[in-house]
Length: 326
Image 1 (cartoon, rainbow, N blue to C red):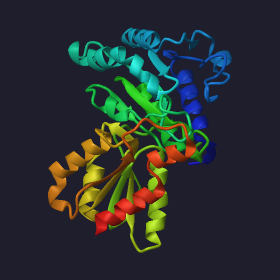
Image 2: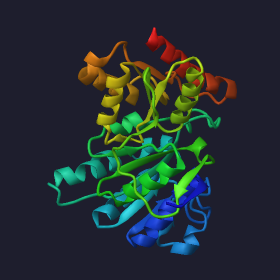
Image 3: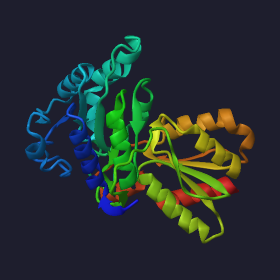
């Protein structure tokens, strides 16, 4: 299949355009998505190409326009809602948690809410505590809501197209520092199923599980460890809900040691949920406790030096792997 190299943000832009061309029921709404083309330039030119009726600039009222999107989804449309930063999800949880995620179940399948909520998350841009959070664990706690965290342009495009076609609400979390990263993407159309992890690197000594930008951190740590004769297997979950438990389990059976890396704060994070599942269902295969590498339980600092100390770095993953191997 012919391939091309594009950025993560271009991959998202292509996925949105292709799905809007394929299905007239797909439309976008959010703050600055139209005239400005999104704060990261992802939807630049969309307003002219698809008309203002399908690329809607909204007021600064996340709860209002998210609720509107839920209503549109219930009426048969497929809205893609952009929340400018994942931190702002906290002001629009009611339509997501109490409406979109529950409607299909409560109606016995008669109603569905096929919407995608795109949210840039993560830290490292010196955006301070109110614009740097990783809130995926909060979302995974909601039955009926799917949660996706792509780490590459290939995954971002394939997973977003699948999410838009899904009949359930999907939270699609994009890391702000991944937008400029590049990768190969097929020139032809392709889809990636939700709930299918990818083994990014084969290994025999320890399993390192990560998501989003921390996949890159894990891969860098694996290179350093390999120079010392330690072969780490790196798994990119890609989606947290649904979770590809089979891939995780097979890796645990092979390596007998696990390190989970997340950019979110350590307390009550998704790594805690996953480590608990591993302990419950794969305890007999473990030769050491599951290790977690995560951000400190503090609001993210604005200071560059302090922010870098607050969330996982390559050296933290290397140290955790060595501790697991002792």
